[in-house]
Image (cartoon, rainbow, N blue to C red; front, side, top):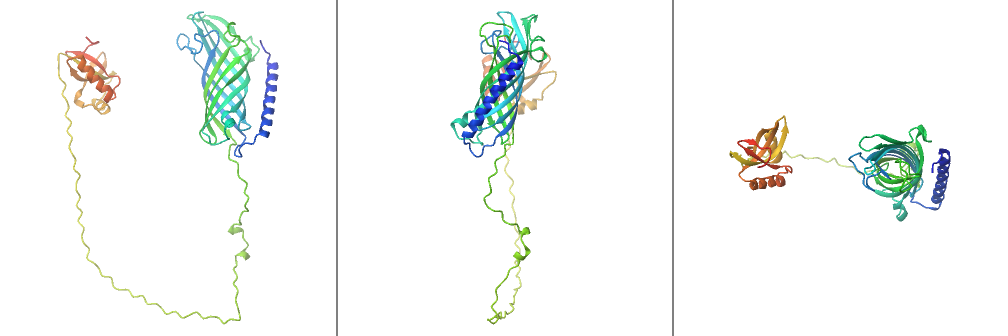
Length: 403
């Protein structure tokens, strides 16, 4: 069923008013933790946009060759968190969709703009007490939106245009096809700080018709999914200040100078008490006796350093031999010292040769393939050269393949 834009906007406004009134009544009866602060939140998202409908090779998994079905979507969101459980969001999306049906020799491409109003329900705060320091919060998403899209259907292989949907003939802006969508999904909010969060969301969108891929048949409603990773920033999310029940003390600068004068009581009936005479104390300083300074002799022992002599193995020359190749580079040579230090191989074991314009580097010389294979396994396991492989040499030149 095709819906006109004015009628759809009216429906969305009615649904929004109902949801807002429900949230307002809920926040009046719900007594959240005193640390909750109603706040605004802005979010940026990006992720995969996948189609599920008639022109699709597999039911669930998208193909990536012979007309790739993987597409991207990007979004902006503005959220008002009205309570620890409920949030209201407005979301704007731009994305693309694609589908391939090899049995029908068809594929299509699509680009769309979507605006929706949705609400989030925090699962953690339903079953547990609100905690603003919680690292992970899970939430449910559902809402309604408007989608404006263009679709082009092509012949598979030749890319001959077979059909268009929208393309200047629709009722949306720019002649696009206008459809309502109903969305529902799940989200995860990873708290990074008081203001910043990382969000992972996935939501399916069911359309009001079966025309997005240009084919009417099968299930009567086309569906597409948007799975995104986003970053959000919370505005006005500072902690509530606790009321100060104690009076502030006056600072020393604000006190009256008269208050700073201290008074002392004096009894005039009593005779004044004369303070006792103090004899001067004589400080006798004895002459310091200098002690002879003993010279300290420090004996510095040099640490014993054991000399390690690395014996480099000389490669054995044979008319026919097997070796293990560890590296190759086209046009430019690699320092054998660098390879020796990187892979912990004695310098004398590494040999450099040319083969088809490549500088190749090999280790060892073996009469049988089994010996070379054992050395190859050692290099993979103990030296970390996971791509080492066995090669054959005849008269000092590498053969293109093993005999």
